[in-house]
Amino acid sequence: MELLKTIIQGKLLFSNANSFGKALKMYEHRIEAYYKNDIIFAPEDIFDEESLTIEIPRLVRQLYEKTFKNTSALIEYCSQFAVSGFIDAWLVQDGNILIYKHLEPVSDKVAVKEFIKGRELADQEGKEQEAIDALTKAIEKYDNHALAYERRAKVNFILEKYHDAKRDYGKSIQYDARNPYPFAGRADVHIAEENWQEAIDDLELAIKLSVALQSVYWRSRRVKAQCHMKLQQYEKAEFDLRLFTNRVFKEGDSNIDWIPYAQYHYGLVLIELEKYTEALDAFSKTAENIDKLQGVETATLLRHTAIAKKNAGKNGYIKDLKEAVKLGDPLAAGLLKEFT
Image (tube, rainbow, N blue to C red; front, top):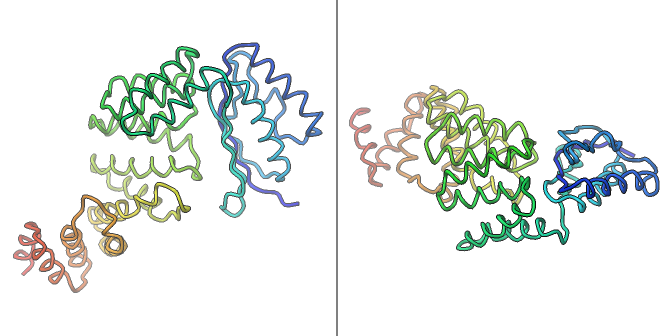
């Protein structure tokens, strides 16, 4: 049997001492009856009677697959006594995810059912008010429902109710400060209000609380780079964009759609840092996917490529500028006169 990298983190919240006690009792019973103590955590390691939670800040350890499966199955069983929260667990070999478990309450409790309903509606255009109504019902049943606050905040953000969104994100963080999503969401509100440093602060926390196996980790890096660019903090932006553009994302990861955007802005940052050869490489990769880059015209890319070529001592920048002029870029026309 091979030892494999295991990552587990998250938090489950219970609505009352009775539910918490049932979960603890079943955990203790099943450790011996079902799993013969082949479990990662002893009850006292993760059950907190004072806060009525199961909490795993982050565990990274080499373990056997059987131990991982036993532990995740037991936590999944106990999660059905909870009312909010989630625990994520990964089993990884050579950087590849062998098993991923997202463990959360799925039960007939009103707070659970209304949250799931609201979460689904939140992703449907035109269903925003219905989503808010369902999530509000979940909160009314369990005031500490961190995830319901986070989803309601997201809907409020979509509706451009920024004050309400920040309030709900704050509530979500108050009840579960280890969840990266409300920090990433609140950063979006700060960006909408052009509060770049506040957004960076929240995104740094989102990165710290997530792992590189999660999409939110990489999205937070990309968006943080955008904020650094707004503040002309180009070295910090370069760091985040270099990591993002070097990452090989798995099929289906939403970050894949943002690769051309990141490559293009990486090139812009490298020009600011006078790293022209590296900028050319970034623009070359952008050109391969220019059809997927919304909001940036081919002429604009050609102009920036020409600037990088000239400063890198490469030929072809005049040709690029002429082509950009043909495509209607007025700034390229000015540069063409300057360079010739």
